[in-house]
Image (cartoon, rainbow, N blue to C red):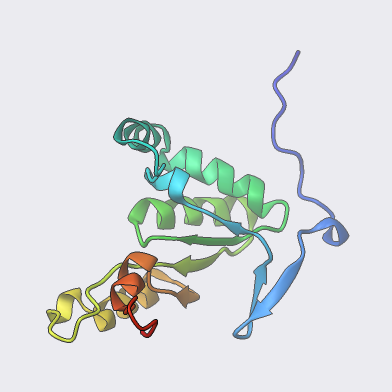
Length: 150
């Protein structure tokens, strides 16, 4: 039996639903990147396996399957392999991907400029992000759990 490959792109009416956020049309499903970048949240061994398996080509192949079905919005950390695989998928499908980046940075007032929010936001812009939302590892540091304030 022949191995099944990705089918041709869905008809416009069959495309995944979209919504508008901040003036940008985004797919209502996001492409997550933990299993592209080695964040299994399970074990170091599983993280290592993910990183060894998820090559630029493998990630691009997965993105193509999403893009062909109208899911073109990806959320993740600003890493070169994501940007490269995204570019490959865009070239193969003719569809521009939308990138929501979640950088980590030092949110404290005494942070060195290169480690602070301005540098992170500039890097996201230069990376081609449509949105830049600080990672929870950054924002959780700002929560005062005693009185529930940020």
